[in-house]
Image (cartoon, rainbow, N blue to C red; front, side):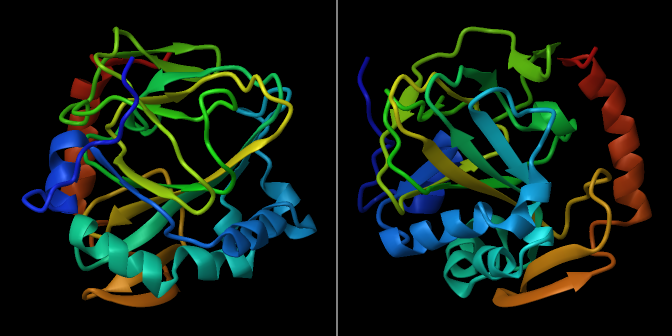
Length: 265
């Protein structure tokens, strides 16, 4: 199997690549020192309460909503460097709907093929910024993506605690990443991670960003808004533009359609 990232040529901008492939890879976005500092914050005492007991299994650990409890991580997810990078993809106004640090230790199992929207039941796209805190290899359980799989919500079935894609992915691509590299992918892009067969821990930090035009009924206020009119502006707010009656109605109506695609039970 050929291992590659989607080609970006002078005639294909990053935004065009994202629209076609469902993801882009940026090398050396952060320094190794920045990543080491971020791991320290993730493992700090104030972050331990964020351990996700549902998804954590054995040596595979998940820490969720870190930004709500750690001021240093709040500053990281709202920093101008990230906001300026995301603006051409998301638009001028967006917020952090979720974050998650993943420590995949020796012997940790496969996290199966899925679209993130299968977990929250959305039709609209949000944006996953995957940050490599350590190197990602096939051996240590790195990230696989399926280019072009992001155009619609696909059938999934709940198996144990996972929503699992019910199909055979076509032409999956492994993302080789070094410390400080980032991967931006659509919440509709199929992805998985495989077992860690090494003796080390593979760390990744994933931040989910969402346009303020879209509605997420599953996240309670306050909301960390990080961009306003195309400019970095970090503030916790009690509401945002997308939390309106029309979007609420659209969400309720779409649940009927989505329930025919996803098997949550």
